[in-house]
Image (tube, rainbow over all chains, first blue to last red; front, side):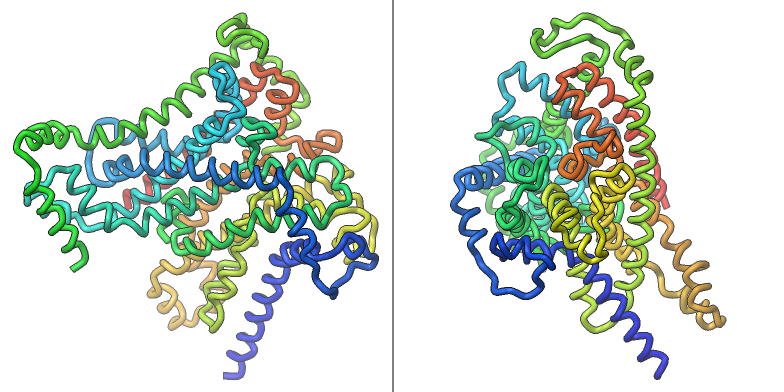
Length: 275
Length: 311
């Protein structure tokens, strides 16, 4: 009994130490965002102070931050909706039917998700440029489908496979077409999967930097691009503003990710591990 | 039963469908799978197939952005030869492979440790599981500049803790380490939750049998848990290799490849060649080299998943 208790204490100790190490950088950054300019550069660093929200009000009143937030929202939403509309039927077909080219499609989807984005981006930039699409949000949405479409198909395929076949089959027996069974029987039952796919895609799109950095200009740039511009070269002196905007960028992702936590594993492993 | 409402709904839809429409439906039904994958196939061709083919062609041209799309002159393998003989590229290739190996090893080690701890059933363990995956969700660019502030030589909190003045990102030896730390910090939790999913799904019988036979904890871990966990470790290993091989965001924000090319990973090299020097033909060639290496890793991953599905 005694041995068990000391063991427990050791495990908790290790867990707490790990959590402190892993969360300290984040906590410190949140702390910096709540300091005045003088407090940020205090030496030795302040560990206790009266928090100020001036950095947040300053960031939120910046026109470029608001514009970038809107751009991020639009391209993420665009990429996710496009991927869902295009990808969900494909995921259903992959889960339920055998057809010619099925394996090729599998392989192509997986490589699309796995290959380095810069490899697609170089030719994409040249092609988009030739068609006058660079610096538009459309180009970013199209670029984002290279990762969000495979993700949607992989996640949704898993959900469709877990759904019992009998439901659609009885709908078919009742005279429903494949399409009717899909829309009226399968889709309503798969809503949790759609939500999970949606959130995981949103997270990836929201966090992307490389595609947006190349395919946008000052008017269409997304939040990560703006953040990189803030911190480019010398870190400057506005650490409060930088950290406050950083916190505002990551806050929505963290909130949404917790909502989809249950499905994180399947999404992250491209379906190789079931959560 | 779940789905009863849906069945009732579909029955009423079927009743309302006129005969003429049903005959048309016959053709759609016969080709349903093909029609369902058609949009995806088209989008994939548009954003993936065509760009890759175009980039293969571009990499064999001498093309500059002031020319029309097909106005370049044929260059054969000249771009590839330029790359292979460019010490900056070969250096970058070796650096990227080393970086990938080091970061992935650290991530797997840390991830396995975290997963083993999180697998112990204790009160409040759910809280730790939640807290420890937070770094994974942070936007990589934001994570990178946060670490840049933490590592700041004059005002960074890390130099305060060690009471030394280290210019972390300005020295070739510490710059690569600093960039790597950000990746490990963000992705060790990723490995941990993959392995945790694996640990949770392991059968309990072998461990119980070994316990009855009087095996020690270490023996059980080494001879039972680890071999059973092998498929999950392989998945994590390959996925992390694929994703670290393309590292870009943290390098771009923290060092932009410097100092003295000490952090010039392949993505950064390709980015600079393509979008700073605008030598897009050379960029396309470098991109194809990256593609081929990734394709090998990706092939390993698919073979692995296939083998697991077959079992």
